[in-house]
Image (cartoon, rainbow, N blue to C red; front, top):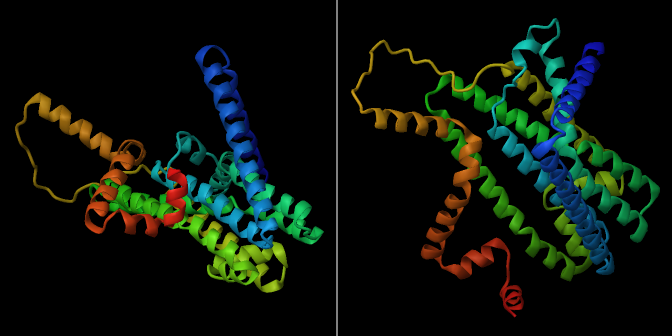
Length: 345
C-alpha cells in the first residue's frame, strides 16, 4: 500500500511539473481556455440537471430525476470509456514503472487514480446536482442525500471499468491476429452508434413517463435492471438494490484492473506472422509511402475515430433514410411529429 501512494504522489508531481513547464506562451493561453471551457461545460450540465429535476418535481415524479440524471451521467462516462479504449492500452513510462520492485496491479491502480481525476468531474457534477436538488426541492430525506453522494463518487468506476476491459481485450486480440486494429475500430464505432441511438430514445421515454404520472415513472425506472438498482440505491437504500449495485460496480472493476495489469506495458499491433514465405513486390516510392501512411492511419484507432466517425454516421443515415424513409428514422430516434413541428415553428 505504501508503494501505491508513492506512485500516486509521483503521478501528481509529474502532471504538475508538465503544467509548470508550459506556463508561458501558447501553452498557458490554451490551458486557460481549456479550463474556462471545462468550467462552462460543467456549469451548463449542472444547470441542465437542476432544471430537469425541477421540471420532474413539478410534474409530480421527483424520483424520476435520479433515474434521468443517472442516464445523463453514464452517457458522458461511457463515451469517455469508449474513447479511452480506442487509445493504446500501454503507457509512456510503462518500462520504467515495470522495472521497479512493484506489482503490476499496484502500478495500474495508481494509474486508476489519475484517470478518475480526469473522467469523474463531469459525471460528479451531473449526478450530484440532481441528488442535491432532489433533496432541497423534492423533499428527499437525509439518507437519500448521503447515499446519492456516495453513489456519485462510485459512478466513475463504470467508464474506467469499460475502458480497461475493452483495452485489455483489444490488446490481446491485436497481439494474436493481423490487422485487428481496423476490426476493433469498427466494433467500437458500432458500439458507440448503438449507444447514441439508445440515448436518443431517452427523450421520448421521458416525455411518456411525465405524461403517464407516477405509475408510468415507476414502470420506466424498473424497465432497465441495472439503472433500477442504482436508482433504488439512492431512493430507499434497501438491502437488495444496494448489494446488487455494489457488486455491479466493484466486481467488474476489479476484473478489469486485473486484466489490464496483465497486458500493461505490452505494445499493441505486435502481431508476428509464423509464415516463412518472404512476400516481396516491387513498388514505386510514391505507392510505398502511401501504403505506409495508410497503415499508420488505420493502426491508430483514435485517428480513425476523430476523422471518420462523422462521415460514416452521415453515410449510414443517408442510406437508412433512402431505404426506410425519414419518418421512420425520426420516430425510431424518439422524436414525435409534434416535436418536429414545434421545432420548425
